[in-house]
Length: 246
Image (cartoon, rainbow, N blue to C red; front, side, top):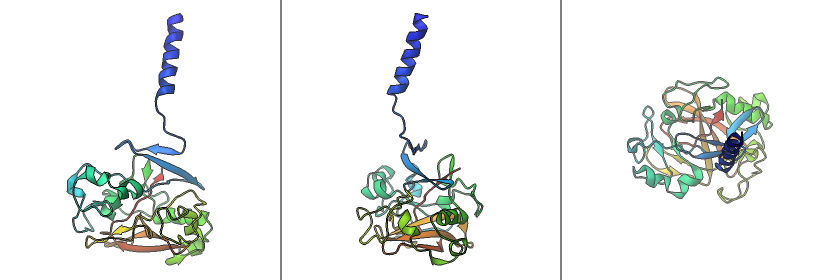
C-alpha cells in the first residue's frame, strides 16, 4: 500500500513538472512550434501566421513562382538553407509565405464551410474557405450582402482583426483595435517575379477557394484602411496563411 502511494505521488510530481502548453495555444507536432489561438464566434483561429517550413531545400528559396508546384518563402530570404531562413527576424515575426499550391498541399479547391482542406495546416486544423472568411467577417459586423461583395467591404472589420499599434504595422495602422484577438500581421507578399513587397504595410492571406485555374481568393488587410478587401490573385504569389480548427 505504501509503495502504491509513493508511486502515485511520483506520477503526479512528474506530470506537474512536465512543461504544459498554455491555455489558448496549440503545438504543431511537425516542428514543435506553439501557436496562440483565439475563439471568434463559433470558429477557432490561429492568432499567428502559420510558420511551418518543410525540411526540404528544394521547395524553399529563390525559385520563380509557380501556379502548379508548391513553393515556400521567408520574406527577404533568397537562399535555400531552411535553418538559416528560420533564423531570420521576419520568419520569427511573420511566418512563411506560401504560394497557393503549397497552401493547398495537393487538395482540390473548396468553398464549403468548413472547407475540409487540411492543406499545409497541422493535423486537426484546416485552410479556411472563402465562405469561412465571410463567416468571420459577418461575426465582426458585416451583412451577408456586404460580405459577398468584391473589393473593399465593410467599415471597421479590418481594424478589429489587426494587431493594434505600430510595432509591426506601419503608421497609421488605421482603426486597429484587435477587438477580435485575431492579431493580424502585415507579412507582405512574394511576387511571381521573385520580389518581396509590402511587409509592414499589408497582410495578404490565402483561402482554399479558387476563382479559376490560375487564380484563388484571398483577403487583403492594409495599414491605411479599416475595412477588408476580398479579391483573387495568381496562384504563384506568396501569401500568409491562418488556419482554423476542425
